[in-house]
Image 1 (cartoon, one colour):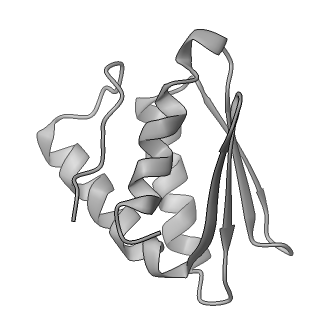
Image 2 (cartoon, rainbow, N blue to C red; image 1 turned 135 degrees about the vertical axis):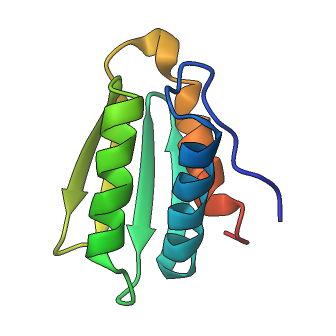
Length: 104
């Protein structure tokens, strides 16, 4: 398994990064598709998604990387991630990698 990349602007310490990686690892089995588009990341989950873990993961991301914007559609189990500043768009790859590192 390849380690999840961390955006250079992330404010998490080493323990925080480790805990966040563990949350991504718990979510990964429910990921059906990850699609990186210009300026956005789309993640589709299957029925096994634990929305509580997803919400915990997003709460941490909002705190440590406030430039991310998350929109979750619970009916479609779809997550759209964008950034406020186009210069931060490469950070979307770190989020994508968190889901893909587990075989997606």
